[in-house]
Every structure is written in structure tokens, then in C-alpha cells.
Length: 222
Ligand code: HEM
Image (cartoon, rainbow, N blue to C red):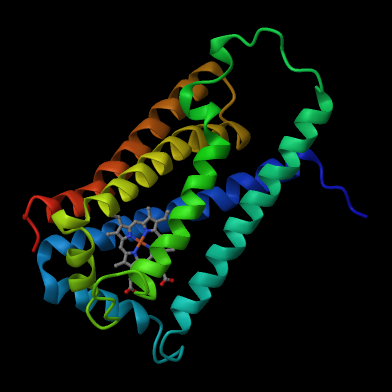
């Protein structure tokens, strides 16, 4: 059986991670359309379903995107798991004293953060894609679904989204930094640059995503 080297696995992890980040950015920009009102937001969601037509039939682009994202998530989890097992085998005895500098909070929460994000994605699809757990769940009116979702009475949904988005932020913060290092930013200056870029990219994403539920919560979007 082929045994890919750890460098190959790290590259697959970095590239699949970058694909997922690209999706997160595009999705966040799309979500911000909520501030333009219901007509614009719903129009955007309908346009997404017809993207690529007439070359592609209705919904095909979305299904291709779903396929690519699923493959990227699976590749990301698989490479993370194999690399973790290899790291454990390489050092079966725990460090008696692990200095704090070994990992920031973000680095130490990569695995649990990843699990929270995965659970969130399952809930999110049942909530805003299939509408199963959404109070409205009307496929034709995503704006109404979002507004109903984050109504003040459903504060626990906003809380869960907040936890998950902050987890995404931490995950990205460390992930972008590691990916930049894997892909070549290995000098001290390069690492400093990677750290700053990682912090800015993840902070923008967290603020952009959280602006939607909190604007609904305080009545700015209704
Ligand atoms: C407050 C933040 C968010 C809001 C308001 C939001 C909103 C939405 C909406 C309205 C849809 C359905 C679009 C449609 O009707 O076609 C959707 C789908 C989706 N969202 Fe989000 N989203 C948020 C955060 C996230 C995050 C953090 C992730 C990933 C970690 C994510 C991943 C997805 C995925 C994978 C889909 C399914 C796309 C598909 O149908 O193929 N979302 N989101």
C-alpha cells in the first residue's frame, strides 16, 4: 500500500484548508447581502442555484460545490488524523513538562475546535439548507429563515452559532499560520508575517459572520 509522506499529507491538509477558507469568505460576503434587504438576499440565493446556467442545468453548480467541499472536509480530517497518529507514534511518552510556548490557545484547541465546527455544519445544513430545524424552513425565502432563526426568543441558536463561529476563528487563526509555514513561510520574518495575516483573516471572518445573527437579535435586520 502507498504510504504518503508526512510532507505530502501536510500539503493536502493545507490545500484543502485553503479551499475551505475560500468558501468561508465567499459565503460570508454573500451573507452580508442581508443588510441590503430581503429582496436582494433572496435574489442572491436564487441566483446561486442557477449559477453556470445555461451551460449547467439548474442546481448543478451547487451540487458540484457540495461535492468539492465534502471532499475537502474529508481530506482535511483524514490527513489531520493520520498526522496525529504519526506524531503520537514518534513520541509515545508525553512531555513531563510541556512549555507554554509549545502552543497558543488556538493551536491547542485545533482538534476540539474541528469537532465543534463539524457538528455546527450538520446543524447548519438542517437549519438553513433543508429547513428541518428552522421555524420557517421555506426554501424559497432564505431571508425569512435567517430572521426567524436569530429572533430574540431563540437566543440559544445565536449562542450556538457564536460558539461555532468563534471556534472557526480560532481554528483558522492557527490553521492559516500552519498552512503558510507548510507552504514556505519558514524564516522568522515569514512566520511573523504569517501570524499577522492569520490573525487579520480570521478576525474579519468572525466579525463578518457574527454581524448577521447579532443584527437580527437587536432588531437591525427584521
Ligand atoms: C451567522 C452565520 C451564517 C449565516 C447567516 C449563514 C447562512 C446560510 C444560509 C442562508 C444558507 C442557505 C443558502 C441557500 O438557501 O441556498 C447557508 C448554507 C450553508 N452554509 Fe452558512 N451561514 C452562516 C455561517 C456558516 C459557517 C460558519 C459555515 C461553515 C463553517 C457555513 C457553511 C454553510 C454550508 C456548507 C452551507 C450549505 C450550502 C449548500 O446548500 O450547499 N455557514 N448558510
